[in-house]
Length: 177
Image 1 (tube, rainbow, N blue to C red):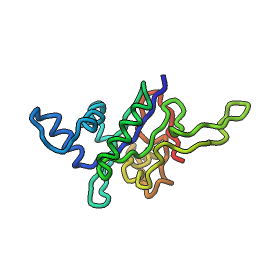
Image 2: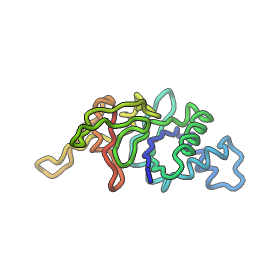
Image 3: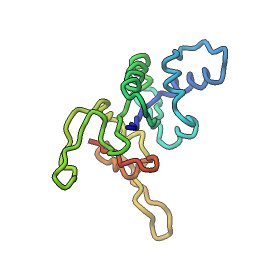
Image 4: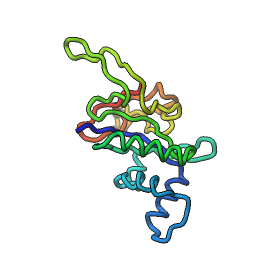
């Protein structure tokens, strides 16, 4: 079965509304059923949120989440498209990658006769957002002589090194093209 790793950013307001609806059976706020259903699929929301940075853009603070999607991928795409249309300035799809290859969903690899990747064709379903670097952790560069970790801050998407981004066991490095 194919799996997709979706990066999706939620504004603090969207996360607050989700938690309010989750925790209050009499909730009457703006969180609609479809958006609540999509956000409910995130496992361990409170802890996963800490795997990435938050950033403020256009007056809103955003949190990045990674969701692993399996099964009916078209239904998942439809759901993501619905919630990003319903909450356009609060929920933003940042990118989506095939779990096994790391290629962006919507693209395909071009391979030589030895099976080496030589190119990528197609158009990403969810192109890498220009501000993605602001939500990712700094690049890990090893340890100094005292055993302390060394990190290099990101300053643009060009600085993203896929091997330093949190991923699940067995997941290929994401390709940020």
